[in-house]
Amino acid sequence: MLDAFWASVYGYQIKKVGNENDAEDITIQTFAKAFNKIHTFNPEYQFSTWLIAISKNVHQDLVRKHKSSIIIKSTLENKEDLYKVIDTTPSPEDKIITEQNLAKLLKDIKKLKPKYQEVIHLRFFQELSYKEIALQINEPMNNVKVKLLRAKKLLAEIIKKSDS
Image (spheres, rainbow, N blue to C red):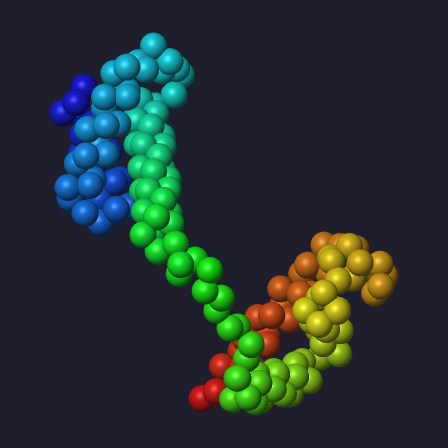
């Protein structure tokens, strides 16, 4: 069993973690769990799929453990740093850049057909939900979603052309 499925589980993990040692450790843990839980395997499904699912869970558990140990370690080592507050207030330069970008974006939006301008404005500037937009423009919600998708694609093309 080990030889038959080792390559697929190891290959899956090497793509996820990009490190041979970690991929091998996770693969070993995967097979250990599979041996312990073999009674839970449902033969209606592919065995390799079951192994990959176990492997995915092993990886996620290790990531969670690693994150929590980093948090605990940084909390203990840098207690004073946790109380330092980062100033997120935009600088005058940041404000100017934001205003220039917004002005350019508004100019690009005006190049769209009015029906697309309207849904962009309602969704991103008035922050209405799809349902609220549908009620406001008196159209089905699916039409609103399609219009927004088209508007975003057209706007992306306009932005690309104006940047080049």
